[in-house]
Length: 139
Ligand SMILES: Cc1cc2nc3c(=O)[nH]c(=O)nc-3n(C[C@H](O)[C@H](O)[C@H](O)COP(=O)(O)OP(=O)(O)OC[C@H]3O[C@@H](n4cnc5c(N)ncnc54)[C@H](O)[C@@H]3O)c2cc1C
Image 1 (cartoon, rainbow, N blue to C red):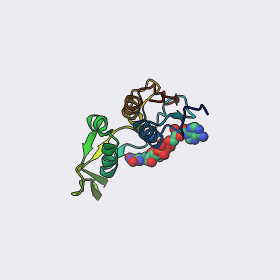
Image 2 (tube, rainbow, N blue to C red):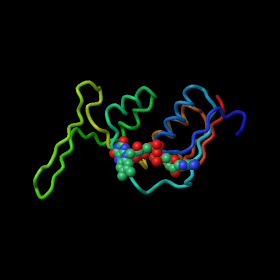
Image 3 (cartoon, rainbow, N blue to C red):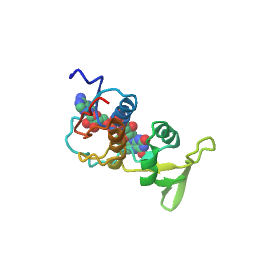
Image 4 (cartoon, rainbow, N blue to C red):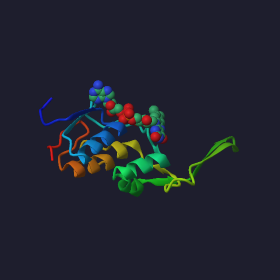
């Protein structure tokens, strides 16, 4: 590993991207490696729940997610025109009283670095960012 890399982040999923951003915010030299060269076509983490929005806020990242999100306050599970369940996503104790629906391909971005997380990490690190391999220069 190059001498200017303090932290090697393996995997450019939501967790790896957030960790890279946190390293960048703290002035650490980081490298992000990802096994896949292209973005997954499958949407996994669609709903970002209130507590996660609070954590993204603390990391200085929540703005782009809020801009991209459809805000959902409740979900009903319906079958044959009969409602089986209704889930509320509006906790009184959070400033974010909704689930933010953002497709994971937006959250994790693509190799052009257009994602919300990648853009934020790139801005913090003042370096280049790619979900295949990202290595910003040490600030
Ligand atoms: C169908 C489905 C729906 C979901 N919906 C939601 C939802 O609505 N809301 C929600 O909050 N969560 C949801 N989840 C869960 C969410 O997807 C995961 O919690 C989240 O993706 C975990 O992030 P991660 O970064 O830990 O892992 P991942 O997203 O799995 O990313 C790990 C990355 O690491 C890479 N990798 C692995 N090993 C290596 C290696 N050795 N070298 C290099 N790269 C490597 C992989 O290629 C991958 O890109 C859903 C999951 C599924 C399957």
